[in-house]
Length: 107
Figure (tube, rainbow, N blue to C red):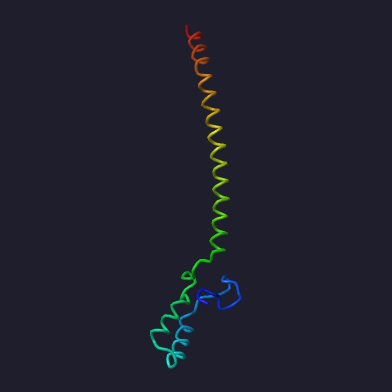
């Protein structure tokens, strides 16, 4: 069936083909399979670890981690904004009192 795994091993344990392995497979199968079909088949096997497609489970785990980090960041931002707002309100309330006290002191 298309898209069905050829092995029961989790995708994380499947490694990319080395150039040596890729060449050996190509050489061994080139007598029995057309060159174009063989090249198509080998394109489904990543040549480097970075070329491996991302699995849905891996992506879901990464997104979950990202959502958790974003929630923590939102909480920190809310705390900082609340602290800043309290400080600004205190300054607004204190400024006239300080101004009157300074005016009384210097007159």
